[in-house]
Image (tube, rainbow, N blue to C red):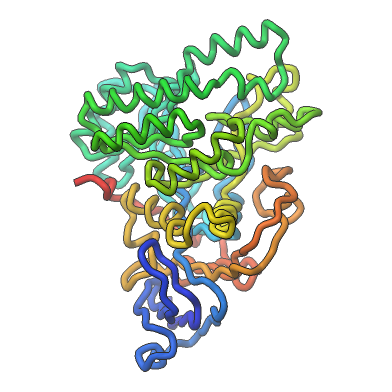
Length: 467
């Protein structure tokens, strides 16, 4: 890496500060910041200057929940690590943490190796891995210790999907006890999958096969019940807990209660729950299938409680759960049976812009935008301050963001490898202009300048919110 870059004249926004400052980048890292127009800033000498006048200069987004190439329901998520990380960069995200999958009967190591093979040499931005634990046994528990030591410090379990990823309460407790010892963080998909399967069977027997029934059987109460149960199991184990893709106000209430009790419990939500609703699932002509994900979209009244949770810090992170399936040939597998629709939405490219729209709409502040999209996910998963902020020594993962540009979201113009947009036709204010990853241009004034293989695997330390 040769040469220095100066980003001049922008408003630098981090989770803690807003300052009109110039940023000097050297050897892939932030070398210095100085207030614009001061002698210190004037003294920056650089081979390349990026003019950020009238723009925001923000840390690259950290999306801590993606599923590239995930096998699900007899098919695969349509984004590869190459297409998915390129789309992420277009949306101002410079680090993803994806999920490696342990299959039942196989070791954690086999799953992790398989995901390394998918990603290596293909990513446009930096990436890390969480580990999905589908088969808790003595060997798996030992492997968890080894993975934490080598920088895979978070483990996802499912209270949903019996027969696929499901863990029972005993398996969950054992994994939590292990993470309490080794410093790992358990991430929980909190839905009562055993009860949901009964409701699915009953709905299909009644001839209720349309996509909207996906939302009706996966009841908010069963998300809240599982969230409560996960919190209490974690409390018994003396372990921290991170609940993924929280969608229901009743589940937010469970998290708020636990946090009020002083428990190390954290919650994530996703843009789809903040901006979409069961109205989308009910769209006619099977269009609703585009919005099938789990946890499901909820009635609109849940949105206000999710925004409130983000403001009060009862929810700390917004990730995407990006797991795209094309409408043609993939979502269509569930025509006549909603339970066969692959679960997942595309969103890795839209998150930073949607959350900026939330700033424009008055839901959150600019600094909170950066906190929930960059800084907190980096801290939660052991990458701060290398990722998630703009400070001397940090990786130069930086976005020049135009807060005034207007755009209309559309599958015609997005870069995700999927044939529809969950936000088709939505007008947004704000757009990514230039993106640097470790000081190298990935998006240069709305042109792709990156390459597959630039992105490096990033081992992580343990959760930085735990003493």
